[in-house]
Image (tube, rainbow, N blue to C red; front, side, top):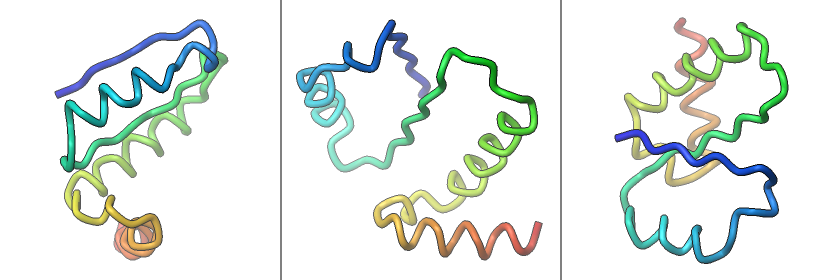
Length: 79
């Protein structure tokens, strides 16, 4: 499931919204993308999508940032 929110400023993101997201997804792994409305180059978009595909295959690794980085590095070595 994909859900997008658009804010005119990061200051518009309230603690209430974050609490609602936590309540809705509870212990399920989620990915939050931050895309600034400035120009994003095509290679950056492709890299984010490639990394998303890798972590999508290993959702449990998203529970710990150190594990995510290690798993990502291993996966990137084989690509």
